[in-house]
Image (cartoon, rainbow, N blue to C red; front, side):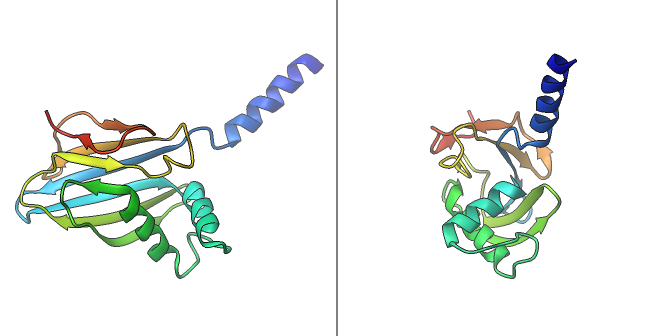
Length: 155
């Protein structure tokens, strides 16, 4: 019985722990408005921990009045598309996820991008970008790993 109990307890602990580090961007090029519209989804606990460390102060991502400004600043540091001058429109927080909304004027869809969020903090971080045009997917999601800098998005 003891042999079965330890694996069961370990499995429960692992299931409750944050097992992987993953971020995702939906990058929609709006052809009518000529804008690049991004929704950047990150794990809330990771972002909260990173902002606490960077700014040396307690911070609750869903309660601190400065959280949105700090999170937007971090996203603008770690996300980029071609020559897009991104600006942050706001942030939405749910139990496990933060979604940041970024936008930039864009005469055409982006050809290159970078998505470095948490890459320096977590060696196993995987970030993906899903390209869309007018809210329709234009191909498979593109993975950005720790070693990736700027990456070609289209053939």
